[in-house]
Amino acid sequence: MRFKALITALCLAFGVAVAPVDASDAGEIKIVGFGDSLMAAYNLKGDEGFPARLEAALRERGHDVTIIDAGVSGDTTSGGLARLDWSIPDGVDGVILELGANDALRGLPPEKTRENLEAMIVRLQQRGIPILLAGMLAPPNMGGDYEASFNAIYPDLAIKYGLTLYPFFLDGVTGNPDLQLTDGMHPNASGINVMVENFIPAAERFIADIQAE
Image (cartoon, rainbow, N blue to C red; front, side):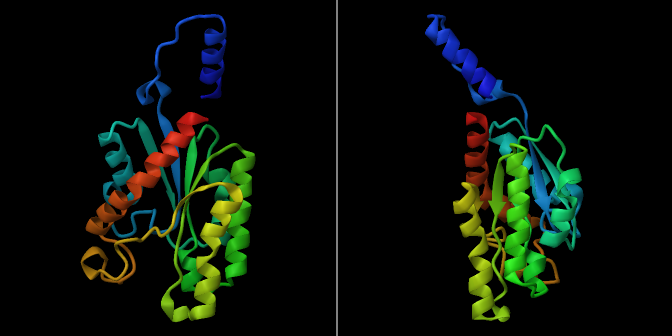
């Protein structure tokens, strides 16, 4: 992307005409969905999971994009940090970072969740990989202090590191049994569709940022 920008600048400097470049000229964008069971199509068919449905929706909107599923059911931020380097190969254009739900369900210290997420963000940025941070909210039964501490993690980190933020990954699904599996926590196929529809604007902003680099 930077190479194209440099060539364009040189052509303009020497008076050479430059044809407009649209999204289709930029080549395929590869994004890794790095998360837990919410990313990993838990109890769903593979093509019903969030990465597959998001990819299909974005392609329908004209984006040449592949969403790679790197979700692991039951993963915490500690588990994600441990597998980060080998789960995200070189050549990736971006990462949707979706972890933290299991930390909250287990009542793990929010300070540790923040520390792990921040370490992942730093590692990815050191590799030059843009991040779309998918936020999570603590269950209300954890108490007000825990909820306030946990819920602040994602917006704080997004501001600190200049990330695209999607505030709540389960937006539109939580509390709606028609969109959930019988466990009352995970989205069913219809719930995934709602999540994808709500997520698309953030995903398109993320793609635009990637293409602008």
